[in-house]
Length: 316
Image 1: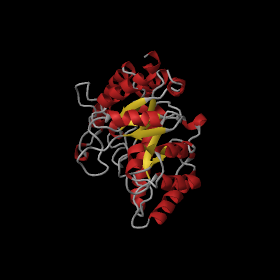
Image 2: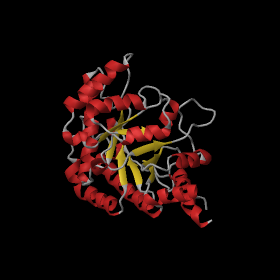
Image 3: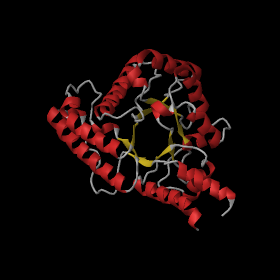
Image 4: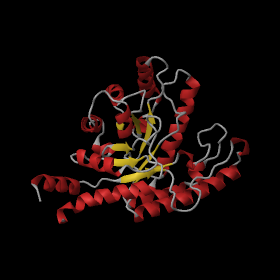
């Protein structure tokens, strides 16, 4: 075996990269998330939906443990309408034992957890009511992870937001709101990610310089919208924003372009050749990888297999 391949193998073996997928498991044969219309809101419907959702989350985690998917993004809808003013129910206390129990499963099996609020969470909006609504959603997800007793390596990722025809002013508004409106507890879990046409990695890094918010690198978004920076340099730059002792190693999102579709549309399934090339080109780095690919655990399984094939190179 060549020295180059030997070095690759030793580097792969030196790190335990966690590969995962977001929110929905398509192999369990049931609806993953139960919710209901706002017009049908009641505490009875809420308790019924959340009880079901937590049971399914347990099943997904057991499935993931069995298949060695040790990175998972929990759906924002797991507590329906938790951040809406209509919800006065003390779900944290009501479901505390369940959430602690699920958190114990996560910790015992060293699963990395993330959450990702919907697009309506825009901290740089000029509309103060939109910002307030976004803060309510973030605070709900913070409370969810806290009730599970997870440490701060479990993250909540958001986009910077809109440009509103003035990217500099919009960035400054995000910086101001982040620095003045968020508590230290919220800041300890929040990360921002680059998007595919508004805020590049370099834009996010400029925000980091004034906030210290870690930057989650979305590899596909970087492919769509970058400033001429290679993915290797991008990982190096984004990785420096993470404090390994407090934040854990850098989280990254990964997808491919869906063929014959608009630029930025996520792929239906993993492009295996591109993924192999990605693994080879980033072999020097430590990261946990979330596959944002539409067939979820199916592509995650193939990604795991490709990674294992690299590990087995030394036996060939």
